[in-house]
Length: 315
Ligand code: FES
Image (cartoon, rainbow, N blue to C red; front, side):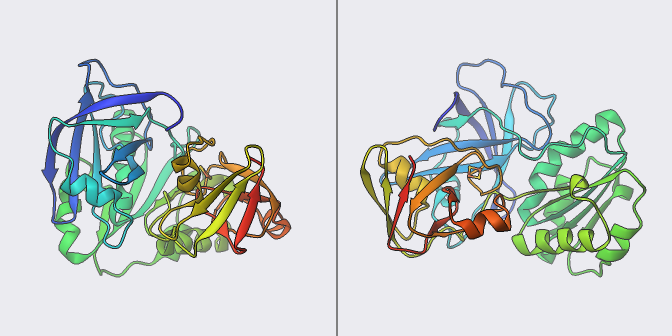
Protein backbone atom coordinates (compact mmCIF):
# COMPACT_ATOMS: atom_id res chain seq x y z
CA UNK A 1 0.00 0.00 0.00
CA UNK A 2 1.52 3.32 -1.00
CA UNK A 3 1.18 6.41 1.23
CA UNK A 4 0.90 6.74 5.00
CA UNK A 5 -0.49 3.73 6.83
CA UNK A 6 -2.51 3.31 10.01
CA UNK A 7 -2.43 0.38 12.39
CA UNK A 8 -5.99 -0.08 13.60
CA UNK A 9 -7.11 -2.45 16.34
CA UNK A 10 -10.50 -4.08 15.85
CA UNK A 11 -12.44 -2.91 18.88
CA UNK A 12 -15.67 -4.79 18.22
CA UNK A 13 -17.56 -6.63 15.50
CA UNK A 14 -21.34 -6.47 15.36
CA UNK A 15 -23.30 -8.75 13.02
CA UNK A 16 -26.15 -6.70 11.52
CA UNK A 17 -27.47 -9.53 9.32
CA UNK A 18 -26.05 -12.78 7.92
CA UNK A 19 -24.32 -10.70 5.20
CA UNK A 20 -23.52 -7.44 7.00
CA UNK A 21 -21.05 -6.82 9.82
CA UNK A 22 -20.08 -3.55 11.49
CA UNK A 23 -16.45 -3.23 12.53
CA UNK A 24 -15.33 -0.63 15.08
CA UNK A 25 -11.65 0.26 14.96
CA UNK A 26 -9.32 2.34 17.08
CA UNK A 27 -5.69 3.37 16.76
CA UNK A 28 -3.43 0.55 17.92
CA UNK A 29 -1.33 3.11 19.83
CA UNK A 30 -4.40 4.42 21.67
CA UNK A 31 -4.29 7.88 20.03
CA UNK A 32 -6.92 9.80 18.10
CA UNK A 33 -7.87 8.66 14.62
CA UNK A 34 -6.92 11.05 11.77
CA UNK A 35 -9.79 13.37 10.78
CA UNK A 36 -11.93 12.73 7.73
CA UNK A 37 -14.79 14.36 5.85
CA UNK A 38 -18.22 12.91 5.02
CA UNK A 39 -17.94 10.30 2.25
CA UNK A 40 -14.34 9.28 3.07
CA UNK A 41 -13.16 5.67 3.01
CA UNK A 42 -10.36 3.55 4.39
CA UNK A 43 -8.48 1.10 2.21
CA UNK A 44 -7.48 -2.00 4.15
CA UNK A 45 -4.47 -4.11 3.37
CA UNK A 46 -5.79 -7.57 4.25
CA UNK A 47 -3.23 -10.33 4.42
CA UNK A 48 -4.53 -13.89 4.12
CA UNK A 49 -2.41 -17.04 4.22
CA UNK A 50 -1.81 -17.08 0.49
CA UNK A 51 -3.45 -13.93 -0.79
CA UNK A 52 -3.61 -10.22 -0.14
CA UNK A 53 -6.60 -7.95 -0.71
CA UNK A 54 -6.91 -4.18 -0.73
CA UNK A 55 -10.51 -3.44 0.01
CA UNK A 56 -12.03 0.00 0.52
CA UNK A 57 -14.87 0.61 2.96
CA UNK A 58 -16.67 3.89 3.65
CA UNK A 59 -16.42 5.33 7.12
CA UNK A 60 -19.83 5.35 8.77
CA UNK A 61 -18.90 7.16 11.99
CA UNK A 62 -19.70 10.89 12.31
CA UNK A 63 -16.77 12.93 10.95
CA UNK A 64 -16.47 14.64 14.35
CA UNK A 65 -15.66 11.32 16.06
CA UNK A 66 -11.94 11.12 16.91
CA UNK A 67 -11.67 8.02 19.13
CA UNK A 68 -12.76 5.41 16.62
CA UNK A 69 -13.72 4.58 13.08
CA UNK A 70 -16.46 2.21 11.96
CA UNK A 71 -17.12 0.48 8.65
CA UNK A 72 -19.85 -1.89 7.49
CA UNK A 73 -18.81 -4.81 5.31
CA UNK A 74 -21.13 -6.84 3.12
CA UNK A 75 -19.97 -10.38 2.53
CA UNK A 76 -19.98 -10.58 -1.27
CA UNK A 77 -20.71 -14.03 -2.64
CA UNK A 78 -18.54 -14.97 -5.63
CA UNK A 79 -16.16 -12.11 -4.82
CA UNK A 80 -12.40 -12.52 -4.78
CA UNK A 81 -12.35 -13.05 -1.02
CA UNK A 82 -11.60 -9.76 0.78
CA UNK A 83 -15.08 -9.40 2.27
CA UNK A 84 -15.14 -13.10 3.22
CA UNK A 85 -11.79 -12.58 4.98
CA UNK A 86 -13.24 -9.64 6.92
CA UNK A 87 -16.30 -11.68 7.92
CA UNK A 88 -14.64 -14.97 8.77
CA UNK A 89 -11.04 -14.33 9.77
CA UNK A 90 -10.89 -10.89 11.37
CA UNK A 91 -11.50 -10.99 15.14
CA UNK A 92 -11.73 -8.35 17.91
CA UNK A 93 -8.26 -7.31 19.10
CA UNK A 94 -6.66 -7.99 15.71
CA UNK A 95 -4.54 -5.22 14.16
CA UNK A 96 -5.39 -4.27 10.58
CA UNK A 97 -3.31 -2.06 8.31
CA UNK A 98 -5.20 0.67 6.47
CA UNK A 99 -4.54 3.82 4.50
CA UNK A 100 -5.34 7.18 6.02
CA UNK A 101 -8.88 8.24 5.05
CA UNK A 102 -9.26 9.33 1.43
CA UNK A 103 -12.31 11.06 0.04
CA UNK A 104 -13.43 10.69 -3.57
CA UNK A 105 -17.06 11.36 -2.74
CA UNK A 106 -17.17 14.62 -0.77
CA UNK A 107 -20.26 16.67 -0.08
CA UNK A 108 -20.65 19.79 -2.22
CA UNK A 109 -20.05 22.91 -0.18
CA UNK A 110 -22.23 25.06 -2.43
CA UNK A 111 -25.32 22.81 -2.67
CA UNK A 112 -28.52 24.26 -1.28
CA UNK A 113 -30.00 20.78 -0.91
CA UNK A 114 -28.56 17.27 -1.12
CA UNK A 115 -30.52 14.49 -2.85
CA UNK A 116 -29.09 11.06 -1.97
CA UNK A 117 -30.02 7.84 -3.79
CA UNK A 118 -28.43 4.59 -2.65
CA UNK A 119 -28.85 0.87 -3.03
CA UNK A 120 -27.84 -1.88 -0.58
CA UNK A 121 -24.43 -1.36 0.99
CA UNK A 122 -24.19 1.90 -1.03
CA UNK A 123 -25.85 3.53 1.98
CA UNK A 124 -22.54 3.54 3.86
CA UNK A 125 -20.98 6.81 2.62
CA UNK A 126 -24.32 8.50 3.27
CA UNK A 127 -24.22 7.53 6.95
CA UNK A 128 -21.34 9.96 7.46
CA UNK A 129 -23.09 12.52 5.20
CA UNK A 130 -26.22 12.42 7.35
CA UNK A 131 -24.22 12.99 10.53
CA UNK A 132 -22.63 16.05 8.91
CA UNK A 133 -25.97 17.36 7.59
CA UNK A 134 -27.46 17.01 11.05
CA UNK A 135 -24.80 19.16 12.66
CA UNK A 136 -25.16 21.83 9.96
CA UNK A 137 -28.95 21.61 9.62
CA UNK A 138 -28.45 21.14 5.85
CA UNK A 139 -31.42 20.27 3.61
CA UNK A 140 -31.43 16.73 2.28
CA UNK A 141 -33.61 13.88 1.04
CA UNK A 142 -32.52 10.23 1.01
CA UNK A 143 -33.98 7.39 -1.05
CA UNK A 144 -32.56 3.97 -0.23
CA UNK A 145 -33.31 0.79 -2.17
CA UNK A 146 -32.91 -2.62 -0.59
CA UNK A 147 -34.39 -6.09 -0.39
CA UNK A 148 -37.53 -6.39 1.74
CA UNK A 149 -35.77 -8.63 4.25
CA UNK A 150 -33.10 -5.97 4.82
CA UNK A 151 -35.44 -2.97 5.13
CA UNK A 152 -35.52 -3.24 8.92
CA UNK A 153 -31.72 -3.37 9.16
CA UNK A 154 -31.26 -0.24 7.05
CA UNK A 155 -34.11 1.44 8.93
CA UNK A 156 -32.20 0.73 12.14
CA UNK A 157 -28.99 2.24 10.71
CA UNK A 158 -30.93 5.39 9.79
CA UNK A 159 -32.94 5.60 13.02
CA UNK A 160 -31.21 8.72 14.36
CA UNK A 161 -32.12 10.87 11.39
CA UNK A 162 -35.28 12.76 10.48
CA UNK A 163 -37.73 10.14 9.25
CA UNK A 164 -39.59 12.63 7.05
CA UNK A 165 -36.47 13.04 4.89
CA UNK A 166 -35.67 9.32 4.63
CA UNK A 167 -37.44 6.93 2.29
CA UNK A 168 -36.64 3.23 2.26
CA UNK A 169 -37.88 1.47 -0.87
CA UNK A 170 -38.08 -2.29 -0.57
CA UNK A 171 -40.21 -3.20 -3.53
CA UNK A 172 -42.39 -0.10 -3.12
CA UNK A 173 -43.19 2.10 -6.11
CA UNK A 174 -40.81 4.92 -6.85
CA UNK A 175 -41.03 7.55 -9.57
CA UNK A 176 -37.40 8.55 -10.19
CA UNK A 177 -38.28 11.07 -12.90
CA UNK A 178 -40.71 12.83 -10.64
CA UNK A 179 -38.19 13.03 -7.76
CA UNK A 180 -35.46 14.34 -10.06
CA UNK A 181 -37.64 16.88 -11.80
CA UNK A 182 -39.13 18.36 -8.62
CA UNK A 183 -35.95 19.41 -6.82
CA UNK A 184 -35.29 23.07 -5.98
CA UNK A 185 -32.57 24.97 -7.82
CA UNK A 186 -29.14 24.37 -6.34
CA UNK A 187 -29.78 20.72 -5.43
CA UNK A 188 -26.87 18.31 -5.87
CA UNK A 189 -27.47 14.61 -6.54
CA UNK A 190 -25.32 11.82 -5.06
CA UNK A 191 -25.69 8.14 -5.83
CA UNK A 192 -23.91 5.05 -4.57
CA UNK A 193 -24.78 1.38 -4.97
CA UNK A 194 -25.00 -1.26 -7.68
CA UNK A 195 -23.80 -0.10 -11.12
CA UNK A 196 -27.27 -0.60 -12.64
CA UNK A 197 -28.90 1.68 -10.10
CA UNK A 198 -26.24 4.37 -10.43
CA UNK A 199 -26.40 4.28 -14.24
CA UNK A 200 -30.19 4.60 -14.16
CA UNK A 201 -30.10 7.49 -11.68
CA UNK A 202 -27.40 9.41 -13.55
CA UNK A 203 -28.87 8.78 -17.02
CA UNK A 204 -32.31 9.87 -15.86
CA UNK A 205 -30.87 12.98 -14.22
CA UNK A 206 -29.06 13.93 -17.44
CA UNK A 207 -32.30 13.42 -19.38
CA UNK A 208 -33.93 15.91 -17.03
CA UNK A 209 -31.18 18.44 -17.68
CA UNK A 210 -29.08 18.04 -14.56
CA UNK A 211 -25.60 19.44 -15.28
CA UNK A 212 -22.57 17.19 -14.69
CA UNK A 213 -21.34 19.59 -12.01
CA UNK A 214 -24.28 18.62 -9.79
CA UNK A 215 -24.00 14.86 -10.23
CA UNK A 216 -21.84 12.83 -7.87
CA UNK A 217 -21.41 9.07 -7.70
CA UNK A 218 -19.09 6.58 -6.13
CA UNK A 219 -18.21 3.07 -7.12
CA UNK A 220 -15.41 1.02 -5.67
CA UNK A 221 -15.62 -1.47 -8.49
CA UNK A 222 -17.00 -4.94 -7.90
CA UNK A 223 -16.60 -8.59 -8.62
CA UNK A 224 -16.50 -7.63 -12.31
CA UNK A 225 -12.70 -7.42 -12.14
CA UNK A 226 -11.69 -10.80 -13.51
CA UNK A 227 -11.24 -11.94 -17.08
CA UNK A 228 -8.91 -13.85 -19.37
CA UNK A 229 -5.28 -14.03 -18.23
CA UNK A 230 -2.65 -12.01 -20.11
CA UNK A 231 0.97 -10.85 -19.86
CA UNK A 232 1.89 -7.29 -18.88
CA UNK A 233 5.37 -6.01 -19.66
CA UNK A 234 6.66 -3.06 -17.66
CA UNK A 235 8.87 -1.27 -20.14
CA UNK A 236 11.10 0.59 -17.67
CA UNK A 237 12.18 -2.47 -15.70
CA UNK A 238 11.57 -5.08 -18.36
CA UNK A 239 9.47 -7.06 -15.85
CA UNK A 240 7.13 -9.57 -17.44
CA UNK A 241 4.08 -10.14 -15.27
CA UNK A 242 1.41 -12.81 -15.69
CA UNK A 243 -2.02 -11.38 -14.80
CA UNK A 244 -4.25 -14.20 -13.58
CA UNK A 245 -7.93 -14.36 -14.38
CA UNK A 246 -8.90 -13.69 -10.73
CA UNK A 247 -6.80 -10.57 -10.17
CA UNK A 248 -6.61 -7.07 -11.55
CA UNK A 249 -3.68 -5.74 -13.55
CA UNK A 250 -2.81 -3.46 -10.62
CA UNK A 251 -2.86 -6.37 -8.16
CA UNK A 252 -0.57 -8.41 -10.38
CA UNK A 253 1.88 -5.50 -10.68
CA UNK A 254 1.84 -5.04 -6.90
CA UNK A 255 2.30 -8.75 -6.33
CA UNK A 256 5.44 -8.49 -8.46
CA UNK A 257 6.84 -5.92 -6.01
CA UNK A 258 6.02 -2.62 -7.77
CA UNK A 259 3.95 0.18 -6.25
CA UNK A 260 2.21 2.13 -9.01
CA UNK A 261 0.25 5.20 -7.93
CA UNK A 262 -3.39 4.49 -7.20
CA UNK A 263 -6.22 5.72 -5.03
CA UNK A 264 -9.80 4.57 -5.67
CA UNK A 265 -8.95 1.21 -7.26
CA UNK A 266 -12.36 1.45 -8.90
CA UNK A 267 -11.63 3.19 -12.19
CA UNK A 268 -12.91 6.58 -11.09
CA UNK A 269 -10.17 8.86 -9.78
CA UNK A 270 -7.59 8.83 -12.60
CA UNK A 271 -4.59 8.28 -10.31
CA UNK A 272 -3.46 5.03 -11.90
CA UNK A 273 -3.55 6.25 -15.52
CA UNK A 274 -0.71 4.53 -17.39
CA UNK A 275 0.54 4.91 -20.96
CA UNK A 276 0.10 1.88 -23.21
CA UNK A 277 3.05 1.30 -25.55
CA UNK A 278 1.87 -1.90 -27.25
CA UNK A 279 -1.23 -4.06 -27.12
CA UNK A 280 -4.91 -3.21 -26.83
CA UNK A 281 -6.61 -2.38 -23.51
CA UNK A 282 -10.07 -3.57 -22.51
CA UNK A 283 -11.33 -0.40 -20.86
CA UNK A 284 -13.51 -0.86 -17.77
CA UNK A 285 -13.06 2.49 -16.06
CA UNK A 286 -15.30 5.52 -15.58
CA UNK A 287 -12.48 8.00 -16.07
CA UNK A 288 -11.32 8.08 -19.71
CA UNK A 289 -13.55 9.78 -22.27
CA UNK A 290 -14.64 8.14 -25.50
CA UNK A 291 -11.77 9.62 -27.52
CA UNK A 292 -9.16 8.50 -25.01
CA UNK A 293 -10.59 5.00 -24.96
CA UNK A 294 -10.64 4.77 -28.74
CA UNK A 295 -7.01 5.90 -28.99
CA UNK A 296 -5.91 3.00 -26.74
CA UNK A 297 -2.96 5.12 -25.60
CA UNK A 298 -3.83 4.93 -21.90
CA UNK A 299 -5.21 2.43 -19.44
CA UNK A 300 -6.53 2.60 -15.87
CA UNK A 301 -4.67 -0.34 -14.47
CA UNK A 302 -6.90 -0.73 -11.39
CA UNK A 303 -9.86 -2.09 -13.35
CA UNK A 304 -8.98 -2.44 -17.04
CA UNK A 305 -7.37 -5.46 -18.64
CA UNK A 306 -5.90 -6.37 -22.04
CA UNK A 307 -7.76 -7.66 -25.08
CA UNK A 308 -4.46 -8.86 -26.52
CA UNK A 309 -2.38 -11.65 -24.95
CA UNK A 310 0.32 -9.15 -24.18
CA UNK A 311 0.33 -5.47 -23.27
CA UNK A 312 3.37 -3.22 -22.81
CA UNK A 313 3.04 -0.41 -20.26
CA UNK A 314 5.09 2.73 -19.65
CA UNK A 315 5.88 1.73 -16.07
S1 FES B 1 -6.87 4.06 -8.88
FE1 FES B 1 -8.49 5.44 -9.32
S2 FES B 1 -8.80 5.11 -11.45
FE2 FES B 1 -7.37 3.61 -10.90
